Image (cartoon, rainbow, N blue to C red):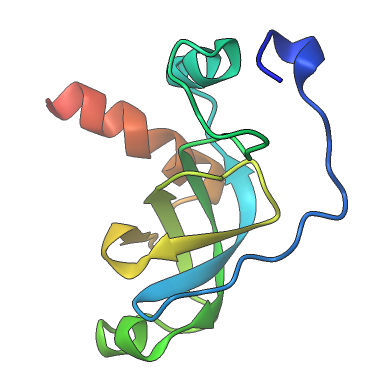
Length: 122
């Protein structure tokens, strides 16, 4: 259901997403919190329910499809992304939305830079 934070529920048996070719599976370590999340929670921007919220995250690639491998992505890569469902343990992300994170950049910082960086840029 839509509503404030009290309407959110923690699901512990949510299935690991299945991948389509051209995607990677990211094991999330961080999820970004953005104002647009309140629009989804309130119902202002309708989403099919139930849904996992979140639009940006960072973590480590756990599974790579053949097309994603052709783009140079591999299991174990540290990455950030802008895609739905980051409030989850695992997220299926289109390879084109993957941003490699250099070893010297902490993943929490990389997460915060995705949407905020695009906002500042545009």
